[in-house]
Image (cartoon, rainbow, N blue to C red; front, top):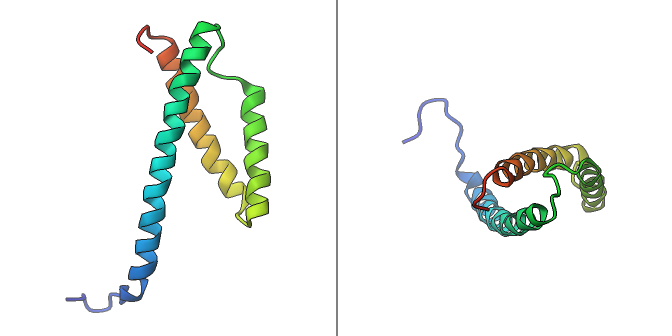
Length: 102
């Protein structure tokens, strides 16, 4: 039963299902990305490469902005998402590079 004055969101059900399916795809892609990050950590450890490579961060940010523009997605939004992801990944790499088990 809908509360008095609450909007009827039933027409959104199909769109919500589409978004939920895309969210699941994104999570699977992030899992694949993290598997590669684990391999990156191993290479960085063997070669004494630091977690943060500032030039690479800026290269990736510029690349995703271009890809966003080409896809018709707001570049500022995509860059913001990627910067959060890159910051988290760098912190994760730093933690793993500082511990012997990676």
